[in-house]
Image (cartoon, rainbow, N blue to C red; front, side, top):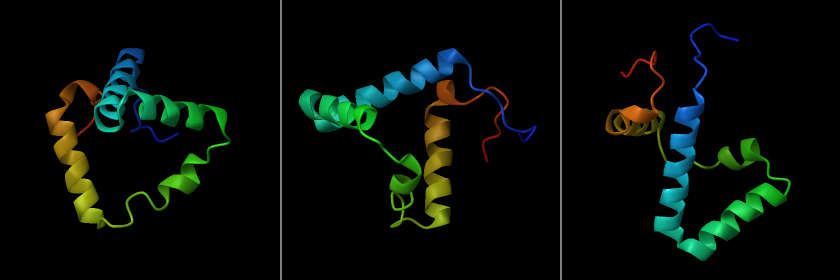
Length: 85
């Protein structure tokens, strides 16, 4: 394991999960949110395969800018020793 990788504390994981569920509910609606979560948890979901095409319409710079902006807007989700560039 890379020594620069920090383990995210349980409270941070809980905050990420809560934020994710809130976003799903707000953007999909309650029923579709539940269907999405149910489908991912019950089916043999290959996250790695799914994410290969998730950001295909974004350049690396756009993706990095988006991640940096998100981290600045949500400091509570950033591991304590992470560096925001």
